Each structure stands twice: as C-alpha cells, then as structure tokens.
Image 1 (cartoon, rainbow, N blue to C red):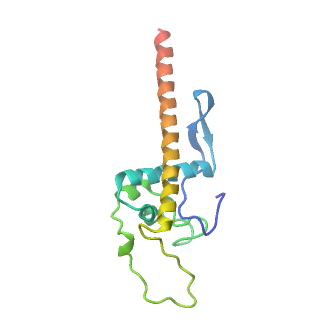
Image 2 (image 1 turned 180 degrees about the horizontal axis):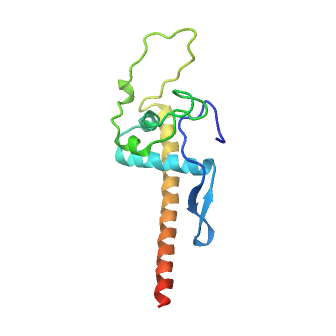
Image 3 (image 1 turned 180 degrees about the vertical axis):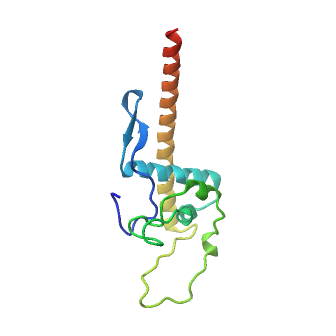
Length: 163
C-alpha cells in the first residue's frame, strides 16, 4: 500500500495492472495511478447507471458496497475497503438520508463527519472532481480500445499477407 491515512475512502487494485504503452504494446505497471483510473472508471459507470445520484451519493454507493479489508470497519489503510464494481452497480443501497442517525454522541467517541447533501457547495466540488476523474478514465479506456483494435487489425493484416 503506497498511500495511507484518514483521507482514504476506498482502494482498488494497483499491482500488476496491464495497460497500453508505447508502439502499440502493453505494459505491466503498479501504483496509485492505476488504482485511481480504476476508481474513476467505477464512478463513471455508477454515474451512467444512476444519473440522478448526487456526487456524494455516488461516493456513498462505492463505500457502502466496498469489501472490507484490514481492521473491521473503516481504517486508514483500506478506508471502507476494496471497491466491488458489480455490487456498486447492482446492490440495493439505501439513500444517505435513510441512514440511521444517533441522537447523542459520547464525549469519548471519535469525531464524525457527515456527507454534504445534494445542492451543497461540497457536492459541486466533489461532482466536478468525480466528473473529471470519470472523463480521464473514459479517455484512457477509449485509447486502450483503439490501441487494441489497431493491434488486432494489424495482426489480421499480417497473418492474411503471410498466406
């Protein structure tokens, strides 16, 4: 794990990720860039499946369906867990405003934060960040698809010419 801390909400695979490279080839890499692209792609798919969700609700859907790893519950290494895209797209996730709230907090309890509701200033910033990440992931996916198509086409021409 290369990044840890309170800022981690979810994690994604970041080791031995194959992607496009130079000269119509593929390369294996590791690191947060790959994980970021995977999460951004997941966000884009959730937005496409549930276009009426606010940015905060999209994040809630990702965190609510993540597979818990490490210490039980949210932790600084895995956040809420590893994203589970199938669950994020298909699970019955209650909306944020349907979450039970506690009437009182203990003085010994750790401070909690609540997500910003739709229409808040935070929702606009989060939405912009999610949209930008989603577009970057879609662009990367389109580049990969074009490279794969070109590679298949070039392979088909080469093998056809060898007859």
